[in-house]
Length: 53
Length: 297
Image (cartoon, rainbow over all chains, first blue to last red; front, side, top):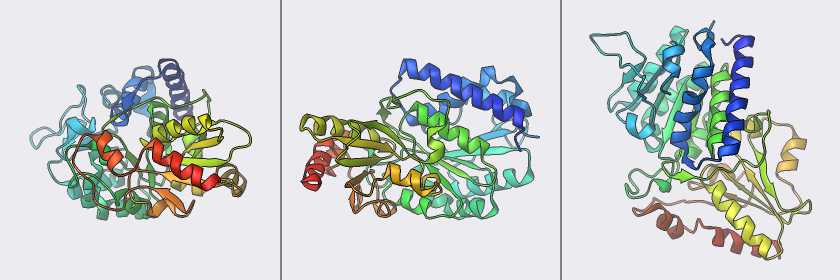
């Protein structure tokens, strides 16, 4: 189960990444996008190890 | 995926002998072996069913979110365990790349046709087919937040353009479908597509506009979530008073509930450069335009 705090953090991070890519508008295979998605949110998400309670 | 496993020790990735192709293994993945269980990535070998069954076991154990990859065509070998993921309500994330004839030269043995329809027929399974990085972010977000529904994230081999039209805090994919672009408030036709075919629908929209035909392009990355929305939303997306064309490079069966005008593939694929294969199967903007003109007359 994800805690509410971590859910909020995840939402904020996804939102920030969406902002970034909206400006960059990268053309990529979605298999690459899948890898980029988690890779890009991770450095800012120090609480990831607490996602699961 | 390269940094997430270091921080989220509960995320365990893997692939059925296709790590490099599925993009599931990164530089920070540490492989679990028979001699060293300290890691976060499993080379399952060419054992798709075993991989899916093991992921169910990991999820049932608790504290672990398993994700595993293979080509979409090989989802058939995972199917009994995917069905059990759904039946047991487990948070398992399936990564299925090489999702259509768009994989090109590997040919019909590797080109999925009926696989998307088959996965969509499984109750309590969210099947996502994102069209760009924005949708992929959102689909992963939904999959990670899901409580009792497994996810299949279906991904292209070929490069796709960024299609997201506007920046919103909302997760557009959460509703299953959204309007990518409308050329008027008084559209004459709706074009619905998923994944790689959203690009083709947008190309068709431009050509239709040149012929003074206004249209609306809808991306539908997740039918299951769209079907759960209220009638008002569904009727806003799929207006009943204008024709609808759906476009997806696969069996049209799962689209027949939305329209009678479905462009897809109901035969096996062909080997060749992917743009030529799309042309062979009439999945082009020109063919969409031709059908649209016929319907709006």
